[in-house]
Length: 136
Length: 357
Image 1 (cartoon, rainbow over the protein chains, first blue to last red):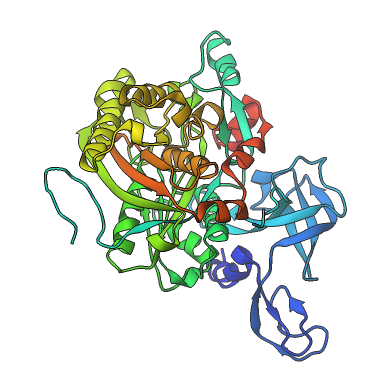
Image 2 (tube, each protein chain N blue to C red):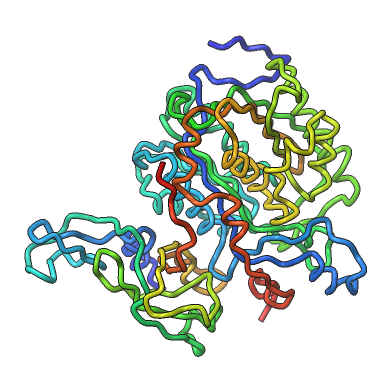
């Protein structure tokens, strides 16, 4: 089990913290420190809004080790409103609800547990948007 | 300093404080009381609630607290770095040793300049964290302190408590009174050693004293705390527009309210147990959020929690002009309750990890 790896990734996993490029303004997720568009250094942290839409998705019936507890579940490519595409599980929905273009929002959920004694790993998943804020 | 009278028990900070932001969370799954009754009594037994909320497979007190905390921050609109305490009260913390609160603090961006701790006192762990937050802010040690009451409550299959033990809760951010949506005028705690309900270490399910949970436990403490607080600050039930009491079922809070002189209308918006069950540490606080979702400036609210073992925390609150401006910034408590997917007993046993493979 890689406790240190989970710990290193927790900022991006809990809050969708990526980076933004100072020279061309592109937003990066996951953080890479170098802009994918203009190759300039990009180390300014940026917290994504968590809003996006389903770009594509699939259903996992035969889950890899550590994820059997959740099967069957859906994994999607989510196109964030700032541009990047992330891979994440869908949650809080039935298996027949997802569609390409579905508006979704990020939530922090249990990703997996390492047996009965190991750590519980938390991170982002996406669900159908359930609220539009009222602006007074 | 406030006048300190050892005999009245009133707790009031030197600096005025209030609730700057609040947020609820209820998972989307529901199991009906009739379905649990079908399993264990052939459908012949009644149920103390219509249905209860059940957490999904990937939810626990940490994930649910994070969502309630985020809703609170949406309403409060403050820099999370100004929070000096993140406290989570629960009797279902995911780890026996490793704080729930540090993960919540990390997820809302409050680390590292913050206190963090997990609280435990059966169903009143959340409100005692609120009292501590009042003291933290009221003393000037903190500008803001976050208190959360959240549970994924355990009910032994077939036990009377299985009908009500539910998942959900709420968070409140305590801060200066002049930034508040509701000012907290004072609070009071009524505590005795009363063995009505407990769970021993390493046990999956709690035990309880059956009928002992009523008069000497719930009613003595809830009534005691309510009356002492109202006496200490010179108010009666007629002075309040709304009241919310801990909700182990639908009947207890209604009976307590009636005995204290509150009309059914005054407790209706906060009486959520018939539709979501008993969310334990979350129960009283989520009832308060439902009231804040509809209350008007100037309204007075009495909030009284109950935790087995046993004790009650009572609070006197008054809504300010700021409330209507902030409440629409996050999903309402009723919004979460309306988001509902019914599940059967088999799915429930899987979601609640009652199936041992």
